[in-house]
Image (cartoon, rainbow, N blue to C red; front, side):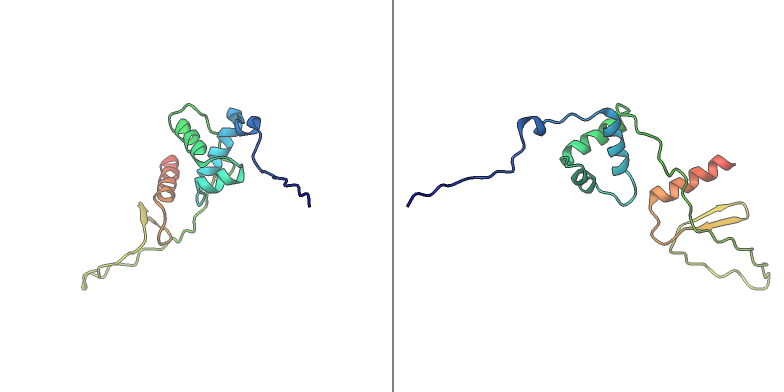
Length: 133
């Protein structure tokens, strides 16, 4: 009995393996990879790109060789509770306060961030406050 063996491959052509990406597209992909909660592997997979290429593009951006677009959602909001300071009772010393979350105090205003707030989040709020003063 005669049999025929046919092999199917999913290998990309040589041309597809060496795609070129315009700088605008690279910058948009890098910008996406820098968003909170995103990973290099996740973003690279979305664009069928090797993670090490995306990491190289991120390095170019850090060196100023790849200009990133302005973020679409440049404004961030954080929950904020403003408390009126309680009157100080001179008869009793104030109790020590244990705080497990970050606080930013500007004059009479105290901003308490959610527990586990990232350093990037705290820095963004500090920059916003500095811009308003």
